[in-house]
Amino acid sequence: MRLGSPLIVKCPFCGEEDKLPYMISGNNFGATYWSDNKVEAPMAIRLDPAIRCRRCRKYYLLSRQRTRQARNCMPVVMAPHLSYPEAVEAYRQFKEQGFHISLAVRVMLLQAYNDYYYRDNDAGEHAPTEDDVQFIHGILLWLAKRWPQNDLFRAELYREAGLMKRAIKLLTDWVPERRCHQVIREEILRRAMENDTRVYQVECAFQRRFRPLRKKAVDSTGIPEQKRLPPHCHDDSC
Image (cartoon, rainbow, N blue to C red; front, side, top):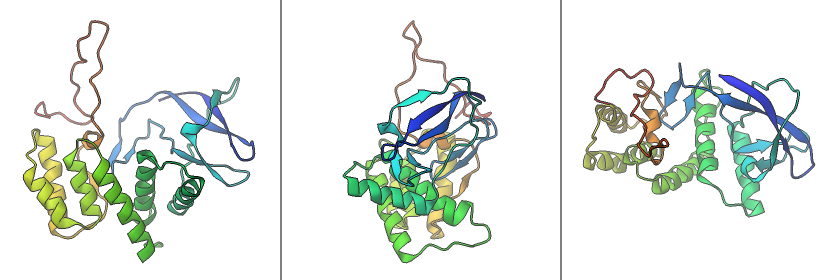
């Protein structure tokens, strides 16, 4: 991973400037993949779509702000991430401001929820309230209805929402074309049949296939890039 001079972003409410890490290059070596589409990669930096100002404590959308690169400044390594209570505050503030709540913000909410109550909660310090469960249930359904061209991840969203019959039906009707998809499909089905709604760590690094499909990159000749195997995958059938 190579880091460059940090990005400078200004709070639209109080004018306080903050420094954010800027990654020149990175990779997914040693990454951990989760069923809610989160990837924890030690050699890559992920920025939340929402930032909390250190001075006025209000939230703003990074995509709506102009940024500039700092000069003669040491790289920033740590990226700020919102906890679940903070992410909920940000969501409510954006709603009050009349902002459109994007898919990225809702994914951030889902992953922050799973961090707070499952991934980072080994000691059982936090337990979701009924309001939390209902709120995240709405987020899951919104994502499941709008996540493009991926029945596998939609079934996982239904499973985490507790809609086991809907998840099982979706996967029963869906025929995987790749062996890696079959592995994930069987694991989601198993957990759905056990009525398990918890996020889980994907054993193989095929989590990236949950993302919306994009056009294949092409070089100057117009020929698509050669297919690359996912990290840690040694099976040509993938």
